[in-house]
Image 1: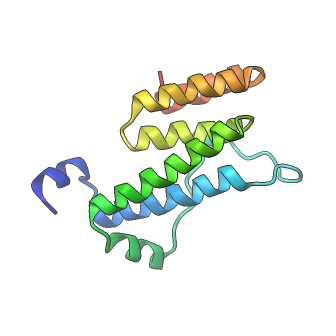
Image 2: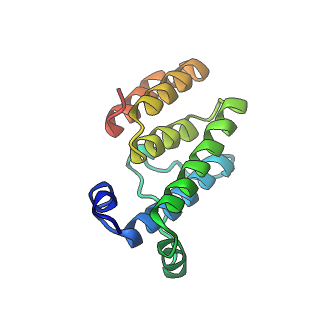
Amino acid sequence: MTQASSKRFPWGKAALGAAVIGLGFAIAYAVNRDDSSAPAPPPVAVQGMPGPSAADVQAASALPLSEQREMAEGMVSRLDARLKSEPKNPDGWIMLMRSRMSLGQPDKASQALKDALAANPDQADMLRQQAEMLGVK
């Protein structure tokens, strides 16, 4: 790992790999879950991301940091596209804001909040509260 990348990712390759994989699981959950019979989970902004298996962490940590980031950005872009076509998913928007903040993209997180509010005006208070927990302005 170069000195520049160690400053950007001080927690190391394995932790970044785990975060990327966890982000993928969390995004898949937010986009594909069936709300019809599930009990209400805690607020999305404060939920822990589902953890990857040891094998997943090992596989992701073997990837160069640039590929790990590219993989995470690809997952987030797919979530963004899905929400644009199916915007009535407040939890998905919260996950997008969380993902954008995790990737160091606060402007895109702010845009996600604006899009979420426009698509879900009846959920505006909850969306703003979740965004505040994430540091989205």
